[in-house]
Length: 519
Ligand code: XUL
Image 1: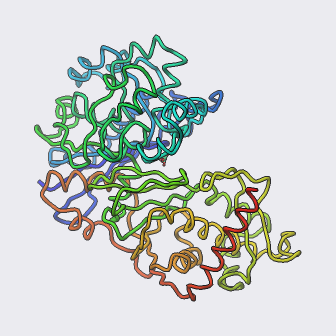
Image 2 (image 1 turned 120 degrees about the vertical axis):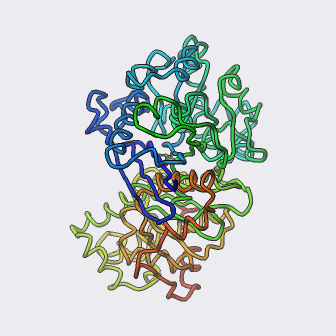
Image 3 (image 1 turned 180 degrees about the horizontal axis):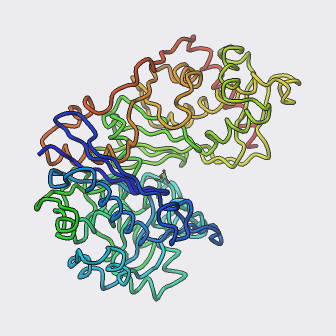
């Protein structure tokens, strides 16, 4: 049979799709919104609101209920006995803490009771810190001090110690609730937790999601004893194995066969993080293509020809689920910054787009550091965006020039900050809400001097998971699957049109502006 199931347990919802790899079609799709469909967890946006000291947690039982609901929905849409390969992905960095009951409970799941009821007694920590949690600055400093500085951690783990990463989160749990830490026999990521439930035993953590922990060494892709020791005692014993993304970790457990009608013996490929999975779902798993996702914040990621870490410590290196490594860099000032400029002039999105036709490439030297809130790439906190280029412009009296300056500033900064990846992309794939804006797409094509395209893909995380499952277990290669499922949107191609020297000069000027803003 030629069906593969991909699951995406993200921050606000759990979604899935089933693909038919012979026909190149999505045959079923479902999604459970945590806030709307599981109101009993009091997490309207998928996390428990009003956490103290930067804490952002979610209830892992909510993720289990959503999984049950999702499979029930899918079983109503399609005969699940036709599914012959499964994989998935989870929001990165979040962690689940399990006690001595975990091993036997996950092995003996009965179809007569929901997953959440059977596994609730196996939690040694009732809630899970997720990627939005910023409570661990002190722990990051402690880990860095123990290792000999951020550069050492970055070279080993692909990132400096980062608040949302799992290692610093584990350290804080150990410090604040040592007894519960000691009762913890297993720590899983969101991805490996759900995968474990599906196979009825501990699943490995893949190199894509594992690298978001500050615990895996990116040279040999396994736990790094020094990083473990600097984080918390006896940590290695509490963690599952690390595996490459093409590993089959088990077969679907009896619970799913009996309850939802899956066939016996369905292989499950190790789950990954949502970003690594999206890399595959966007058809960019081989070097040469890169993805820019234009969302609340903008994210830039790409398969890497070789493993290098960002010397400035802003970017991240993760494992690429299809082998090798990938880079990821987040820019906090994404759509919110574009929206702030638009709103400042009372424009709608059409007027915003028209501003590009009324101004010229390079904006006549009018520049903006478009950081409305603290930025992570580079790490900078400005009282307000910095503008340069004449009094009227600097006093926000030139709406169209300000809009171009904001967007040019964002992508010039992105080009500068991602230079460490040493990529020479043939094509950039755009995704996310603002990717529909052709004017923005043209600016990106000109700044990166590369072709820019939108894909018809929606739900690239779940699609990437289904494609990984299919390529591991159903005998179709990823390139074949990409040509079936990752097609460019007709007429969305933008090619570089401007003289490259305009934006190299502009990049130089922006870097100068940045240096003087920091000093
Ligand atoms: C990546 C990150 C988020 C989460 C949630 O480092 O924190 O993108 O993966 O989507």
